[in-house]
Amino acid sequence: MKLRPFIALLLFALLASGSFGQSRFDNPSEVITSFYRAMEQEALETRSAELKALFLEEGTIHSIVQKSSLTSSPKGGSVTDFLQGSSGFYLANTMSYDEIERSIDYYVDIATVHSLVFQTIVERNNANIAYEQMLWFSFTMVFEKDRWFLTNVSWVNAFEDEDIDDAMRLDTLWHPTKN
Amino acid sequence: MIAIRKHSILYSITAALLCFATSLLAQLPSTSVDALDAFYHASSRADFNPNDHLLPTARCQVVTYAEDGSTKAISFTPQAYAVQIDTLTKLFEVDQQPVVILSRYYGHLATAYLSLYTRLIDRQNGDTLRLRSMQSVQLIQQNGWKIASLVIQNEVEAYPFSEELWPRELSEDLKLGIGSISQVEPDTTTSTSPEADYDPNKVYNVDQLQVAPEYPGDPALFTSLLSSFAATMDSSLEGSPFTVVIEEDGFARLGYVGDLSGAEIERAQSFVKSMLIWYPGVLDDASVKTKLIFYLL
Image (tube, rainbow over the protein chains, first blue to last red):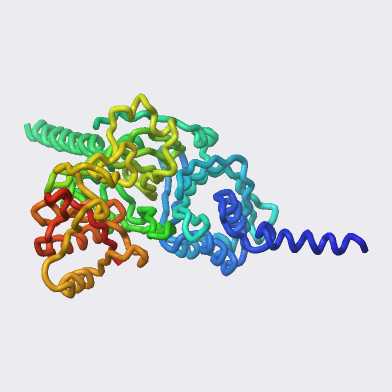
């Protein structure tokens, strides 16, 4: 009984701080976590509302299905294009994402985030059939109206010829420049 | 003989096709970094073709700031971005060079987070602006590497670039500033000391003068000119700032335009061209160059 006021106070504090209630997206990591959560939503309305809340109005999504080092099928467009194009796939499957690794580069009001995730796809009609794969996601963001918005998300799946961990390896290139 | 001739023709056609294919392949950037180089080179020129460098679904976002410091990202389609480049290259000779590229790639997706050095030479008066920006680029291989997303953040003076992205070894010869908000070196063309002696080469602020520049004729003329171009001198109205320099002979020329979009630069230029000859600013009984700050609404 004595715990009740404490729990109520704790809940109030969490809600007031925004960490439990509505997200404020005031750091890039929060946007990434919310993005994966939105991508897992089964209902189109929920998925649509959660994804659109993360992107600027002109935001874009590009995905690459990589079959081998030489062949791939890139697709891209607005968030609405993505929602429409993937709705059939979501009707037949459920998806979950487990993030393995993340790195962030930022300067003032832009940020770039790289993330490796483990994706699990399960057929709705037969839960025994599941597909698993690793994906590399690259996010670009801008800080506007006191929060971070996604401007573009691109991703590519792992393929046999190359270790996807390579995606997180950074090459620093010095460019010869003349005044 | 006929058979030999047929073979000769076949060989010729095959050779011609091979040459054509090889020349096409030679034109396509072989790596994402080559594609970036090609993009920055091409987007410094008036004949920039967005289809060669950007996917049709690509968006270019430029971070801009309102007078109150709030951020607004302006989004451009590839065609709209090309219009901006076209406008910019009409006004300035443009040179863009990446300095440090932090590159990642896997399969047919590549990213670059890079520092960029930009030099703009005013085609009318030869003034040079040297700026730097941070840019985040995503590229996808689809008939060659093409840009899917470009986000541009111009330098903010309060947040200097890190040594990693602007190393001394690469940047010590790169001058910055001259009319640029993002300058590192002091702007020697604009005096900031109220006690500064008269110098014919300096551009003075109004508060340093004995007599401020004055637009000729009825004040309503100037008000009408301002309203025709949706311009103001009132900083509280949260417009996009730019400067106009009134020369010693009273002629006006466009100064700093770093916070304006391409279309706004065009509007600002028309605004300045529509001005009559001013009565110039006066210091120590001599006409001097004066900087005026305007805002586009």
